[in-house]
Image (cartoon, rainbow, N blue to C red; front, top):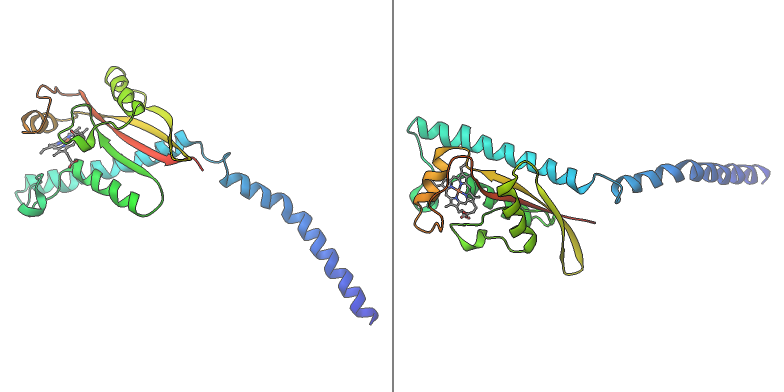
Length: 197
Ligand code: HEC
């Protein structure tokens, strides 16, 4: 009987000290995932780096390389023509897939002179960002957007006419409202939106 009492107290003591021991580390784990975690600017910048790397790889190693070897080309109506999708379409489709997985991350290509209206800016933040990126493409434009009761952080990075093919295709596209894009012009932006909770 005495033994049982002793081990009861020993167990209680152990639980007590382990509670004290785990207390602070549980708290810091909570802090790490809470609002004091990665700042949204940084999180958006990380996502941007991944999107940019994937787009570059798709453009250079898949589209350009296979096109140069006359194996397959890329075209807008890739599904009907059995070609590769355009890099812009690759980004839009990937953004759609990411949105469908429930993570609430959104990213898409937008422009002030979009070939399709669906790629036009949808808020003042997006519109102003594209205007200010045209003047100063070196810094992304960021802001907070509200949707329902939720807040989101949005960062808009410039999308530059890095090669002649960009301007040739856009300037010559039947539906393009702008036909005088020049090399290195800011053609639009990559808008990344992440939830702030
Ligand atoms: C062969 C044609 C073609 C080429 C080359 C091309 N684009 Fe596009 N681009 C498109 C089409 C088509 C869309 C619309 C895609 C969609 O939403 O379905 C688009 C969309 C965009 C958008 C979103 C706004 C809009 O106009 O709809 C931007 C910004 C953009 N492209 C920039 C570029 C840049 C920068 C390059 C070169 C690195 C480039 N494009 C090369 C055809 C092209």
